[in-house]
Length: 378
Image 1: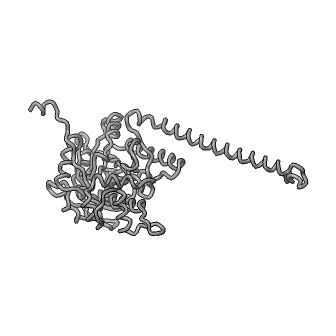
Image 2: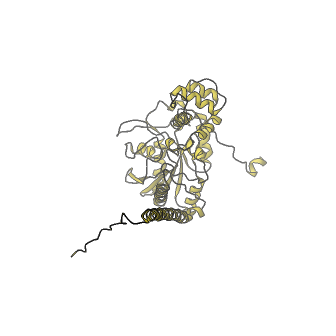
Image 3: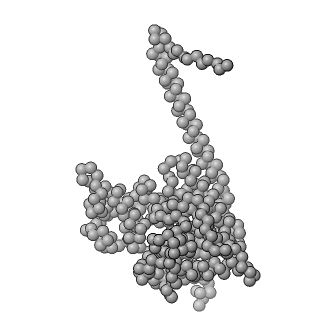
């Protein structure tokens, strides 16, 4: 037999101190809610500290991981995504026999993470590391060739251009032109370039003492450098989801290329914890719409790109400061607030999106390597 619940009748309406008691109860209820909120925040903080402690293995080896920038709306979501992306990245590294680190040919040093390479060598020296310079069509030929020579002094390096064809199956592959480090002559080619060289390199790794063995190839790199597009180009089909915003790949994707080669696509992770959002935004590692301050990255763009080039691209008049530049962009693109005042933040996001899409031409050149004692003597 269920016990009958007696409803609380509350305070009698004629109670002489009713108003004071009601206020006291309201105060106690608010205090209890505040205490509960404070304890909840303390629990979140302790979880964050525990997460940092759990990542001490990579930190000890010099590899510092940062939460994926595509999921930064709240502390809880940031913690969950950080753990998930970190776990998926480690899973790819540990399961792979060969690691392909994808770099954007426009600024490959900024995309490269030597700490990842050092971690791989120290934990498992038998794993092979290959550097892949993607988007070679966006840099001049001579610059691409210089980057290839620069990186090949350290590791096997392959020049690559992913397929831009729209069909789901039968994506084309062509041989990279001889002595081609990229350049505008590749812009008109929609088929993949460089796949033959990369596949031949991977097939060489499948041979062990003259016997062909199966290998697993992990594809790693910063968000939006073209990891999934690389896999689609090698498979000649759209098997991995792609997009021009960071964070499209959220979990490991496994693709069987043939009976000897299996590919693992990993989520993009920003590895440098001390890196500013502005620097990450210029590498398309943070979604433009998620940026709290889109103005600072635009100021960095103005330091790298000649003003005349931007004036011709956007068909605007001369400017002398980032604020004046964004003022002209807002007027030209119709980014206005109420009352017709230019919206600099909206204009900055337009410029950043153009930057990430490659509409603003930009590239870096290899630095000079320090000479060895023998070279100096010669």
